Length: 204
Image (cartoon, rainbow, N blue to C red; front, side):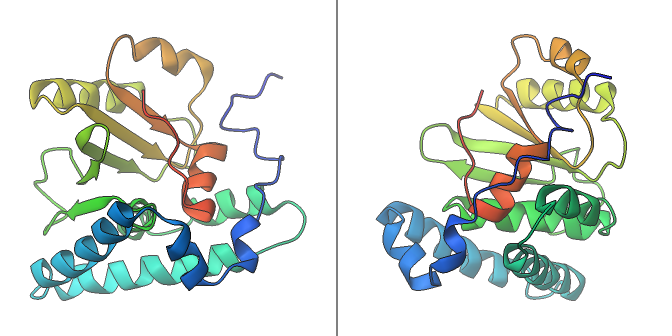
């Protein structure tokens, strides 16, 4: 059986950041990233001040990330993926947005979970501008229809880029549906690099 790139989670993600304090990590971040991260947290806290459910989910997302980043030992990657596939979908959505924030991006969180038009949030990237974000907590293979619909949204609203983040399996056939879209799929090892190492990598 041939494994997709999302299933190859046996290669452990280096835990370089585990021995660093938060202050040390902040010192290594560019000034713009630090400003964006702090501004994102403050502005979203103000925007969600009357949304207790959202605030609670954001707090839980930060707790989950702290938990995952504290893990070590063998089979770390499969353990993390298995754990994420059991997380509440709304909390998983906030986990991804919080991780993007931790990367130094300015994140615009939605103030409601329904009627968002298929876009779960936006993240400002210094090289691409505002990027649409859609998060799916899958346990199995990703739906090609979901990816295609999101690509159409990104094109319709003229976003310079779109991030489709999921916890499932993409499969080689799915990449044929991307075509010339501006989507970046983030799953498997790349998802763990985002969550654990605060590394987004290159976009499309």
